[in-house]
Amino acid sequence: MTFEIESDVPMPQSHSRGSSYPLAQLKVGESFLIEGTRTANAVRSTFYARCKVLGIAILAREVDGGVRVWRKS
Image 1 (tube, rainbow, N blue to C red):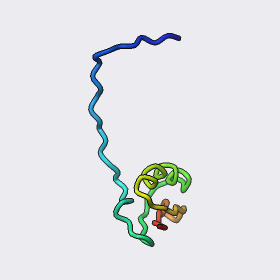
Image 2: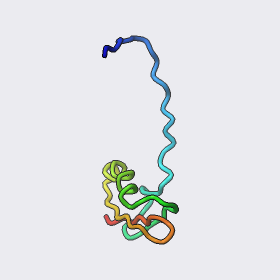
Image 3: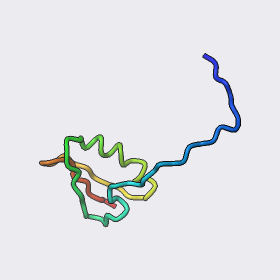
Image 4: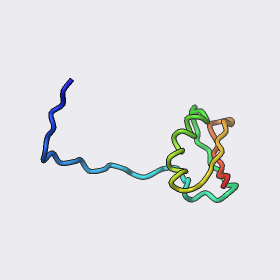
């Protein structure tokens, strides 16, 4: 497989809308519920990089109605 290297192709604008989850606002011991059928492992994987940037640790557990996320530190 070969690739053609091109110049002068503009990069698209970022469409990042930020996180809809309140990780940055959580204080230690506070939590929020993510309703639905996601697993705790999926939630931890989704939040891993963001928590690392924020310097926080979370705990995610499957509960009735979804996954609850607590801030540990």
